[in-house]
Length: 329
Image (tube, rainbow, N blue to C red; front, side, top):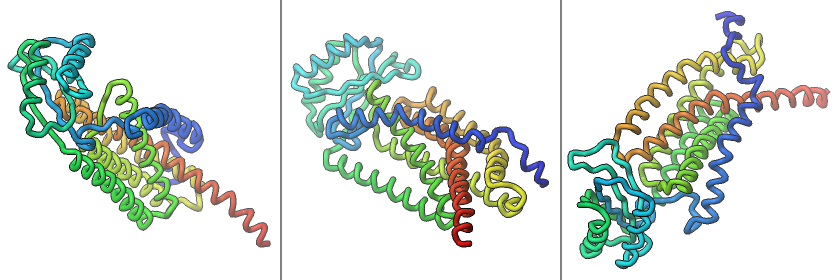
């Protein structure tokens, strides 16, 4: 491959590198603001709304035939509190299609841990039977407070170990500055997804559970995989063209050489996830949404964020070299 061929590119990453960094800042700003707001106002100062997987409690889901208005939902909450159900958290899950039993919506009621207290379940069922036509109890799931706390600690441990493993691998596989850029790219992607779910928690009462941590770990793996492909191409091109081209030109060419592969891989994955989101089960929607957001931002960061960071770092090192030589003389 000649120097002219490698210099050809579809997009100029290096020339507009500060624009890409500004785009990243704009993408992260709303979610970061939501995280700060939620950390201040949420109970226990947690920046995300967490489900019973981490806090402990019981979720009961009832299938109903009719559509549910906000006024009806408010009445149900008041009726439950009148029956002694403390601070019920009620969410409406829209069914993807009408079931054989005519269920159009699912009422999800989260309350304190009730364990084997069948009387409490009967009271909740009695309230819903007055407010809706033949509500069907679909599922009851409970997590004790101790187990919820243990799951939260294990989730944090899993994320921490994943980050440490990636840092160790990238430091050995590449130079430390490449590893640092990749880690910042992962942090960029995770912050975007977590910030998005913080916004969803504020405006739509979306809660995170164990599947959300699974999605975050998957996004981390996908993000670093895409970044490694770009870095590998940069390192390979440096071997052959470092004396003929600047680092910025090599980085540009490397990104453009891997551009089609990155987009095609991400696009095929996103098409599958979109199908799961629109036609899959209600219980996996948030998990799939986190994957969609993570893969989309991961593709962006590997092309427009991580490669730009490496180029800025190389520029910084090169600008120091002449000065060092002058002082030495």
